[in-house]
Image 1 (cartoon, one colour):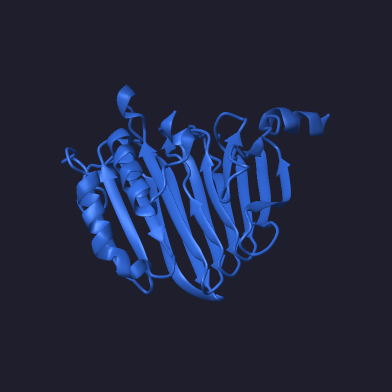
Image 2 (cartoon, one colour):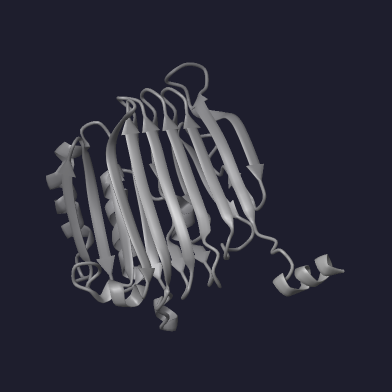
Length: 286
């Protein structure tokens, strides 16, 4: 009876979404062959779809059948690219992070790239709702000559509905190693009065959306002037957006800030299409 009373006071344990995908890909029929699936495991609401299986570069679309991420959910993506594999990963839609009454939602992304492998990590934006609590981590281990391009965008509330993230937690950790050596480390943590923090000039300058692009491909550092020129061209007609590019330690980074995600997303898509010399995944156009 005492056990029943204790359970009634604490409430029933919540049922949370736990999703994961693990994908291994490699070239078929020799090192120059088209990239194909070697192994795939899916669990919970996480699924991968492959709309362009017949092309040399494999495209994977991540689907969350739960319709979003709520307090205490845990999602994980693990990608393993064998030598000379070529993969583009995107998402079927923007990922929504809903309000939490305490528990932190966790998203863990891990990638490993073998020699000569190329990965373009191009998910659509993440949208945080007021009082959302999310901790995200991206870790990559690259062979010396592997190529990794990562793009992540975040919207703090939906501009069209005049939403803002007044309170919440957003932690974003990036760690990249090449040949076992740490070459890139970045951590963003906004905890508590998120809107007030973003209003500070040294943090967001009033922005409600931000994005980071990181190119860790051989020769990326030498593309700095090209990246700046492409940013200028892609941002024409959008004076409210701020964009900057820098390069060091063999890689190139682009940062974007804006008052809402729509214009920022459009600029990023134009920039990425030109920078990659390839159209964006079709789901970006829907």
